[in-house]
Length: 135
Image (cartoon, rainbow, N blue to C red; front, side, top):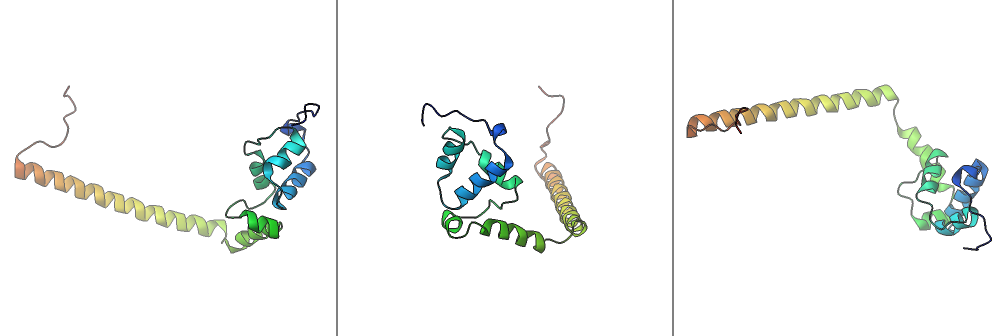
């Protein structure tokens, strides 16, 4: 780092500059180099990743080779994902059905455990459940 270079805080960087930094990174330039060039510091602490998410870039499953070949691929993948999703009410109905099924399964497991304990207590003539007033 050049000693005469002023360190810039992230709040001082405009959104246009942020987008320019992200484009440089996606074109294949190392993230640490891009960050140091614009801020004067070497480590970004995940700030560029948060900016990418806010600006609509898909940050999942994109390899360095893909970023170098096609920087716009990230935005295209984000748009494709949005088109594939059904509307919110359908998602909520599916989620409710899954949760109701899980609830029913957990109730069945609980009842099976209670019956097993009751049977074991009768067979072994032991008290298996914990007493609440013991020390």
